[in-house]
View 1 (tube, rainbow, N blue to C red):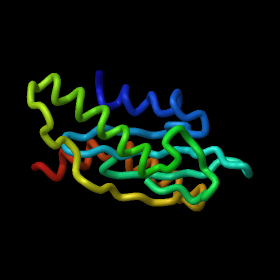
View 2 (view 1 turned 135 degrees about the vertical axis):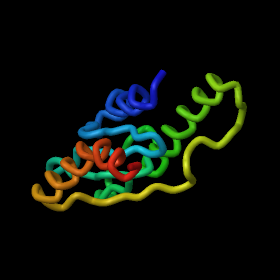
View 3 (view 1 turned 60 degrees about the horizontal axis):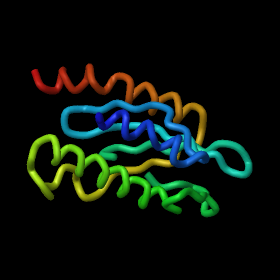
Length: 125
């Protein structure tokens, strides 16, 4: 099990959601979800581990917040099993979200995500 593999399961569990970009960092992650709506696709980026613009979005968990809570719970349980640290917190309580409103924003956020590992290393120097 890896955090990335668990996140990639999102599209299998929720047919309305496409995982686009994802980067797992040492202490957080960034990604873009594409939410398929009745009028096409809506992009949502997240940091930390997002809220959807569409009120009619449905999934097994009904909301993006519930989906992220489920992801955090599943990964925390597996991480704690591997570490043999039952019930220890793994994730921060909240997360940052941003609705992507244009192709320009989409490209900028995707570039930020792709460059995050390089920028993380620079900030550690």
